[in-house]
Amino acid sequence: MDATEGMAAASNVTLSKLQALNGIFAIYKKQGPTSADVLNVLKSKLLKEAGVANPNPRKRKKQALKLGHGGTLDSSASGVLVVGIGEGTKMLTTMLAGSKKYTAVGELGRATDTLDSTGSVVQEKGYDHVTKESFEEKLKEFTGEIMQVPPLYSALKKDGKRLSVLIKQGHEVEAKPARPVTVYNLSLKDFSPPLFTLDIECGGGFYVRSLVDELGKALSSCAHVRELTRTKQGQFTLEEHVLKEESWTFQDISQSLQPCPEPTSQQNNSKKGKTQGKSAQGGSENVSGDHSQNTTKGESGDRRD
Image 1 (cartoon, rainbow, N blue to C red):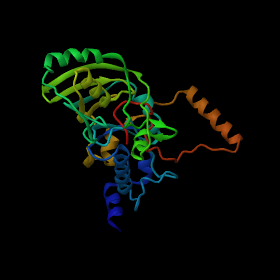
Image 2 (cartoon, rainbow, N blue to C red):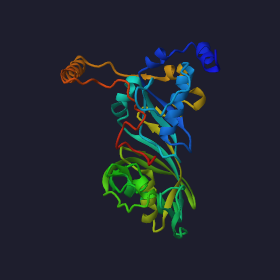
Image 3 (spheres, rainbow, N blue to C red):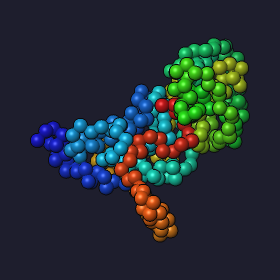
Image 4 (cartoon, rainbow, N blue to C red):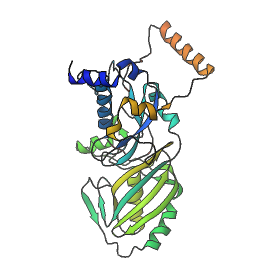
């Protein structure tokens, strides 16, 4: 018996038990890895605990375990990352409806091409004229229903390719047009020039990096995001619900799992009709495919990985 099999035997976890988990839960994403990287680490841990030798979490077809995440975070961001397992991968969009909360540390006086600290400085301007009072007054203009231009370095796509990838390949990329987004609450938590800290509650499709960039311009200066933490997504909060990496185990996930709602008879009949229709055409439903990509397209956040 090798170490992996021994671990599975000790915890009494089998692959069938793992595959029986259905629902959503929240994990903590640290700064550095992409959201997809974090999901692959989680999947590897669970498969090893279940005794699967040499699991390949990046393999897309005939996966032993279905996992997906909702609302991608930038690699440089941290905080709440919601994960669906089994049938939960299909519920991410509906169960994550609602607002998201972020804490962002920004820096006045410097703008970068990525709008955060990972990019190159493209502009420097003075900020001595910016006071706490003028800052708080300007925040009112960015609260409510506003128009926002998404960052060039983002996961938004052109011709099937992400804008951030096209830029890195040397292609000329135009900014996407401004689009409506909602800011429910926006407050200045700390003001220690050049640094400032914002608490933000927003709806889907919102980019914190764009907010900080536009705020800097509105204050006749410039700014970029130094740190970004998502503190809430859907019903999941950073303080109460997230599992740190040491708790990415079958037992801890089972205890924190939010189960999928039971399908109604109408939904069952609808699914049955679709399945019969596919069978009549010689097709079949893919029930083993991997869902490790972001399954909530257009969800908020700051994302480009």
